[in-house]
Image (cartoon, rainbow, N blue to C red; front, side):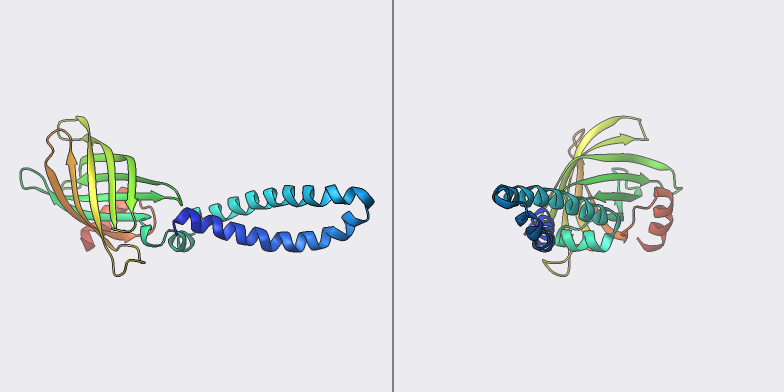
Length: 213
């Protein structure tokens, strides 16, 4: 079951339960309307169901945006929300630390990343254009736009990362793969770990990454 299907199944279940009690209370009142109750019952049921479904969908979606435990439950093995850190070497053999912030909802994923030099200065920054998660195979694929702080150029690229997880039903704790800029097509390997389920600022995340990556 996809996260969207799981989300809507929960909303539907809650709507049906609440509607049962509402209808049970309204039927006696509608019956008192006489012959017109034949038309009022289905009309009231339909309007109430649509209203309740929309209301509960908004409430659950709001909770999922603010409560990571609920988002984690709904997304299951595709749960990536949070801050990830890793390392890679450029074409000169220099090691760079990468920080990626995964902003995830039930139906979308946006990735913002930054690479740092050893002195903490920015090496490059990127933002995802499109993202795709293969839940079955455990693979994240995304395209991005990158701004280099070396020659101040802007270019696009693609990233492909496999999940390292303890079970097919569990979210990954590590991402291992590569990114390739379209300027040269060279694959740059990286292995990232989630350092927080929160969306940390890059400076704070860099301090934490220096201690754990």
